[in-house]
Length: 473
Image 1 (cartoon, rainbow, N blue to C red):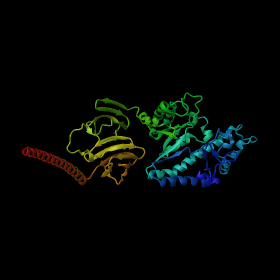
Image 2 (image 1 turned 90 degrees about the vertical axis):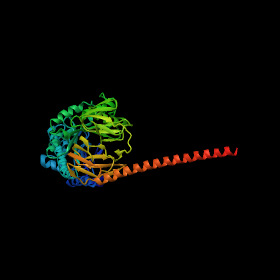
Image 3 (image 1 turned 180 degrees about the horizontal axis):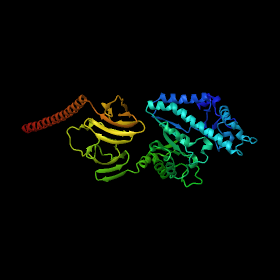
């Protein structure tokens, strides 16, 4: 809105000459070079200004309402667009809306198709130019780039209404390393969850690497359910769960767009939905778990200190256990009386946002391997002494928050070793633990002895008073 208000001269124009406030958006005319430069410069400056995880180029296209059937909402019809198209095609596109013109769209569908193809090329060029600017920034700062594209392959009206040609955007994937996020148009939202199976089958034939494909689910109360079997205005409950499972088939990732419209019980349940292929068996005081992906298990509140496959496990937090992919047996470490509990010095992995392949305890801490298309966060229970990535010491600085420590790790496939303490620190910490324990023991024994001495004095005095009373009598 700020840009719209400050630059009225760059506002997009509809076929009736009105400002391009179409749908929910206030369109700027990106065909004007100065406007496009200002918009893209702002985007790049904004990316450089903060520590973003990534950037999503979302719905970079036109909005219209019923295409040419509603001229007052039809874009783009600014002077720059009209003159460029005139030079290329020998007619002014505004003539598509003149009933007396030989190019009137209702009589000359070929002329309309020619302008629609021109619009699709403009949308392609916008993506190409913005990606040219954004990609180097993202690479330098280890950020992910996502392109959210409305799906025109299954819709008869999407290209007409928005200028989006999905095949043209797909052609950019060979040149730019972005994640493609496909969004189905609103007229599909009331269809069943199995529509994403159809979308997946279509796009996997066109996307070479399925790890670069994901789908976007819109969970907002704007869908028309009058002629559908959808039970509620907004997808929720079992319908939302089935939709998420269907939409994540391509790469395991799925986006849920919500304007505060996903109920908390659904948010809580979706983590379990995403782990729907995990197998968990309870065997007395142990579990057997098998999963194709890393998962988080809810543990009984009274459990603490775990063994996985017979070894002390470094991946657990408050009532949760973090497990990599594979088959594992989890058991509780039996509590035995110990004069000194050294577990207070242990360093643990509380959470990890990437795709973890393995997690192993070491003498000095633990190590893990992961493979992630975007940079990840490891959350630890205490500050580590040293962090090694692929066998090399790094200068990564852990960040403290609420008693825990987070580490930002790079994208890609890596092996990370977390070293809890230096040799000197280990000696100091162990000595401190032993000395503090000795002080506690000494204090406890001393207090006990003082208590016994006090009781002995009281008893002695009592007997002395009793003996004196007997002599007086």
